[in-house]
Image 1 (tube, rainbow, N blue to C red):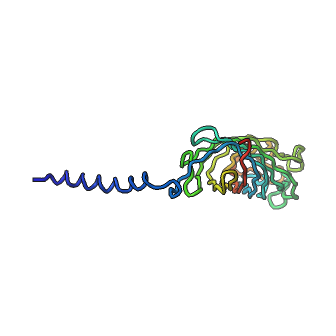
Image 2 (cartoon, helix red, strand yellow):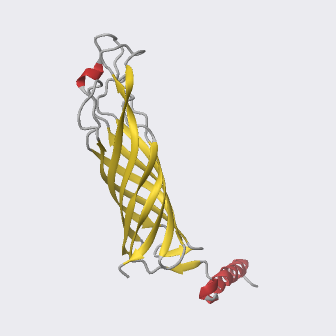
Image 3 (cartoon, helix red, strand yellow):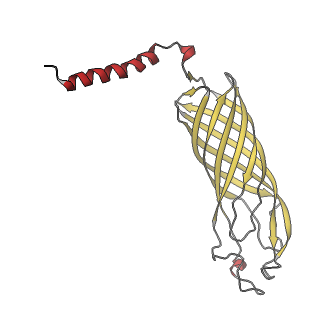
Length: 232
């Protein structure tokens, strides 16, 4: 008498073997996967920086961003990404000696400039799937505001800050030498308010409503970049 479990195991093995045989036996040109011969790449990046709302409301506003990026294949599924970016924007100027209804006295133009370096990992390894390669990355860098080194009536200046960079993206391989990449990244940096933001002489409501003078803000960058291979 044939053991029913043996029959089930045999049928299951046949069903599993069929797609595996089809995958192993398929021609390279018909495979959805493509092995990559990555080296160094350099190109341009553009997008939009959505700045997070800080409690005091004196941080830079959202604005378009532009820059350049350099990508280096380290080994296997790991890549080094270096990006330099800039965004021309402005920030509110608040007079902390005035009441909440009248303390907004204008704005100040600033040029946010940053540099990030991150380690990216490909989710498909050292190959693409239908010319796409999904990636996650984590890193850090610096961000500063050109033209905002001197204080104003708000007694605030952006200064240079450390930032934490994390996000995800996808590469689309146009050919062996060029690609387009889409990314969504979050830049976390810490605001630094002056002590006077705890309260004002004219209004008991402080500019910093939660009393914290060093809150973190989350800022989102949505970008597209075009890079080409160099040093092949």
